[in-house]
Length: 273
Image (tube, helix red, strand yellow):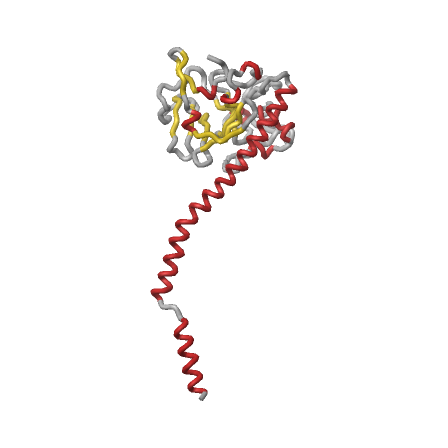
């Protein structure tokens, strides 16, 4: 009787075991599902970061409107210069510093997808840049967004009434860290192609929508890159001069219109040209 029971248990146990081929099939199915789902999860995480970044730009847009109402409807300069010396000195107040009292939060100026240095305002650290020497005083104060200082003066220091199309004029856009956190090129650096070609040398304005991340801008003689960056699935979050914020594709920001014989990037000039 006991021998019969043991044979029965052995038979049941043997019938429940997986063969090697069955295990390999299961592992292969799991690997295929992982290959399909992991990119989806990565995109979902990036979408969450894009949403957080867009929230930042919306808060910046609100603070911009409050600041402009307090200062005779005038937009902030990229950098003020109460200390004298170089206007790029990071000990001087930057445009983020003058908006920070309205946001009450330094983190607003940092995109979650940006791995660069975090912005620390003068309100948080009044001694920012203290002890720096030489070129160290003109490094970026950190942060992930650039003020539109293109076409010479750009929008900094401009009265709101002088912005011809505020809903179509960039105030700030995602970008790398450069002095004063400003997106800059002078009137001499105009695009000569539509869309602009990728940057291949110093002082050349260009666009590359296949770069990671895509960019629009130029590299100066010192090697600094003044780029609008599409950090979020080729989209850049933008603060517009009318106080709204929106994710915008880099090729759209590179849209050109010709005034006389002069090509300009239409979203970066506040004047009616």
